[in-house]
Image 1 (cartoon, one colour):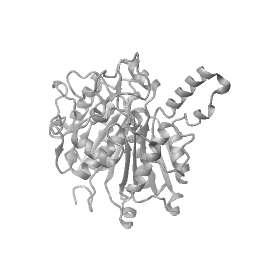
Image 2 (tube, rainbow, N blue to C red; image 1 turned 90 degrees about the vertical axis):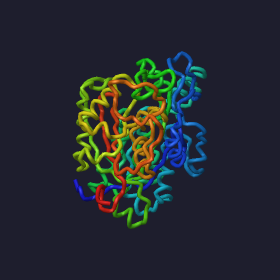
Image 3 (cartoon, helix red, strand yellow; image 1 turned 30 degrees about the vertical axis):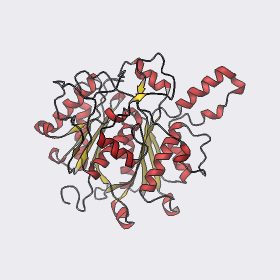
Image 4 (cartoon, rainbow, N blue to C red; image 1 turned 180 degrees about the vertical axis):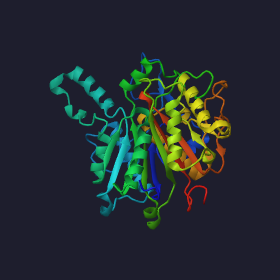
Length: 416
């Protein structure tokens, strides 16, 4: 790998429970706004929880132009395309120049894909019968549809990949996209994640009893589970020299990432935190940074009993005594757990924190857990200069990804 090639972030786009664009997202994060409330996308009667982090006021034609066909797009496809267009406009790359399309690619993490449309199709078929069922509704049921729609609508001819590593998928997509550019397989990458709300996923997490009936409270002594959310989160990545040559705005850069597997359990994390520890250490090694260079940790922080203790233990194992000096927060307390989009959404949180000089809070926190005794930023937003931010994504199946983002400095972190 060409370690000398620096990869920067030049565009951002998102729709989530607390914002429908990047400026709104910055404001909501600073205000500690909670977007976890009653779901109205489908009937929640009979479920343990009625709440979630739903994208609100999403009128698709406010985000996707009329010349884009949305006829067979799923909710996931529309959300991801909307976030992509925002990111490209933000990067100054829309409309796309024809010259860059051949080596421009897309990597998207996801999970539920078009399941919401499949659920609606099945309900319609039961009511009207098979002969009157519209099977075209199933054309976007597969998770890879979102990357396909982005690539086809923009005419991209570079690498196209979908990741389905549960809650680490969006983060893994970003790391993989960086590698493609570093190794000259792509010139520019659209990278991120998308996750729509749907009944099946909501029912599954309720069946596991891993959702809080109210709102999630990461690291709190009385935490009672996660809150499910939906989102699309997209970054535009390109080489530093290209970004500088075209005068692009630079949000920050990807300094390193690590990927590991627990090989422990289908849904529970390894309580010894071995996979999480190795993931963070791999990211540090890849970045060339030491533990003293990390200024903020965006925790996976799901508010489940085992995960929060495990992640706290892992941070202590990696950072030693310095763990108590590093601010740690879980923004899932605001936008909920967006599964396949989570790593990308929280990556955007890190980039915005670096760009705007603030640490977002962990909201809904009430009482200290003696097993979770780090600085979780529970007293509101903190304004401070940040050089680096480490973002953890620890998924079902023991799929772990850690990314380290850096504030852009001419000579690199620590030299600017």
